Length: 200
Image 1: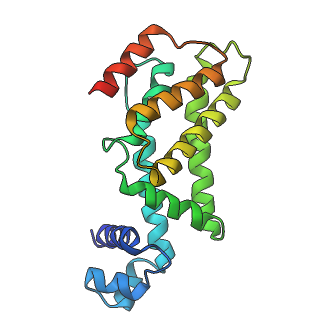
Image 2: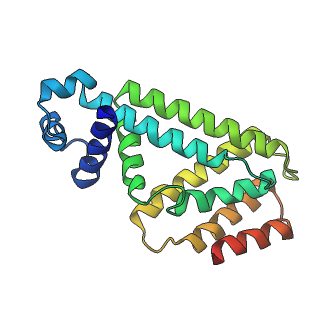
């Protein structure tokens, strides 16, 4: 319980002023502890942040792999809804994700978390793409990597560009999928389902 309170407090502080501007003293004050008491639960501010990143990544993977009757192709397109609506990833998490990626450049433990997360995400997408006809001849692994990169780019852009709403995200992802799959149109059933999702 205390660990969860500490992780949630760091999340609030990072959202308010960023990781670099948040000190261990700030975090201890936020949870009503002394620094030494806080260090009983986590050995550093970075360790708390690692736990926060792990929590976000676990929630994301659980969300995209939840039981579903959708086809693999429908699940690929449904990612855009999951990522860009509050149901899957609350908008404040865009900022947290940016902090995680930025810290991964110089913090080996954070980089390891990001690397493992990307591998798990690619493995899931690869399995889905193995069941999808790919007239372009692109391998399932390459299709998965391109899709992940496209979604990561859209997620990053959405943080800084308020014009990128859910409808536009669906359209941009659909165009990317057409290019990745080497087809002119997506199956009608998938287009209809995507249209219903956006309308809702």
